[in-house]
Image 1: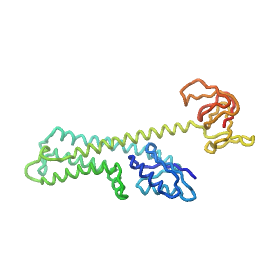
Image 2: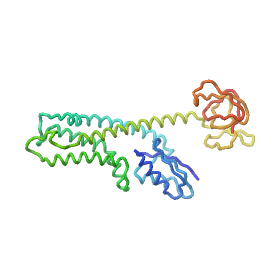
Image 3: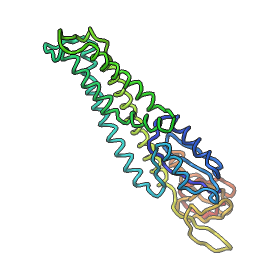
Image 4: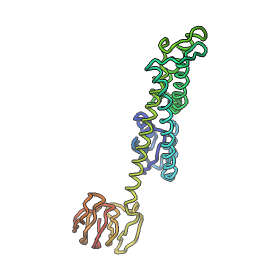
Length: 309
């Protein structure tokens, strides 16, 4: 069995997670699959003699999402930053442009200008509300179309149908009144441009907060991983050799000299020392360690050489 982890771009809700997990588990040769919404990643355990990683990626791509592999970590980081910047700008513009329709509607403000038989206030609501929903909220509608093509629905489907219903009904209500004649005031029409705009604006704001928190979590995890040692001194047949920490297996005996980071969790089998565990516990005083005591990866060996298993 082999285990692989890759990032998925484009998930917005628990429905996206469930769908990708289901698709991966249906593939012949996959023993287990877990999709994490918080990190936007999938971890799959599979038989490499039956299925390859390209097939796993293809199942996710077929669902309408994008895949980033471990080899494109820098690309993933750049994409997260671009996503955050774009989400922030869409949210700001959506909030700014949805404010006039809300104010005009809530306070029934009439402007001293009429165009084609409608008060200018109504036309401002129509223009700004439609732009916010259709223009700034395009990602909802694209997501809905992708899911509809696969005969599936997710949060994008709900948002898109709700906001478009408000906009299209309002446009139909305007057209039904007809153009010309006496100017129609806001209070004379049953229109909901501001409703669709506010829903889209609040969802876009929520997605900005989501992208921001996800970026902060990724940054924190990256810094945490950087604390760990990259290599370990492996003892085999009485000989010492340096190996990447990824190659250390359960049962190996490792030598940690004074001043070095402990590469992995383990138990002391020889030697006595003091270890700085402040990165783990916050306690600044070194902790005395003896044979059979547990030690933890990324903590620092202070003053004695030890062998750990």
